[in-house]
Image 1: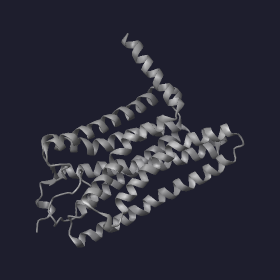
Image 2: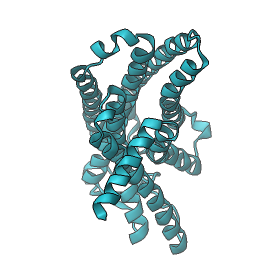
Image 3: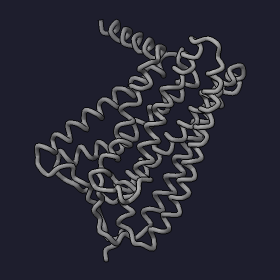
Image 4: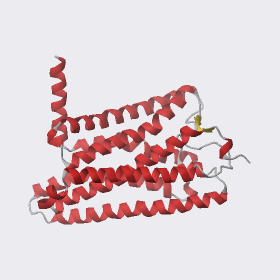
Length: 311
């Protein structure tokens, strides 16, 4: 039997066999990738350049956009290159790097979404203490903790995954190096060791999930007590974009990793992977900017300033 030490590369899933379909896949992913670059890049630029947006909410949003850009850049360009050059190969070290970066950015994003839920809770439920408790130092510490948790988890999980001997070949049935698909190549005895780490991961996931749920229970309870309809509308407008992003992130991710084996199929696994790894980074900027007047005004000012400078 072959083991991981004898592999110099992995073979990723090809979206299509015909040249026309490969180019179609390249074009679709290119469009999504450019949309993600444009949307997240604009949010990063607007928040960084406009001092009126130097608040905790927009500071965390800037971090979220950076993580979204990183996560989609980890998977999509490689898949596009494979379709364009009609190849499936990715080096062993390249696969390990892809797993590490994807886990790092995805875990950091989930932690950051939990922090953002806490920030919304403080802003709505404890407004008198908000500026004191959520000062710049506290925000930097929270964001750093989110990034650090992602890094530590990625180091642990990547090291454990690639220390397991692989007995089932080197063909990964996914368009990027996804941990569940790599584990399908492992020997049964070593798979149980990884299963223990996955149980720990689920505990961490549900811990963050409970924190988000409790935050929003308190938020909605406080919002419903606001006497004016305008005040309730403003409070909901602050929370709904974040709630939509969290719902998209958690629902697609949980379905990808917790769906029963009976529902698993190559086509479904591929669709779900696209939904949780490609769609959110492209859609998140649209969700956050759609009903955000401050962000729209700052973007208009930035565009006007650029046009004036060109003239």
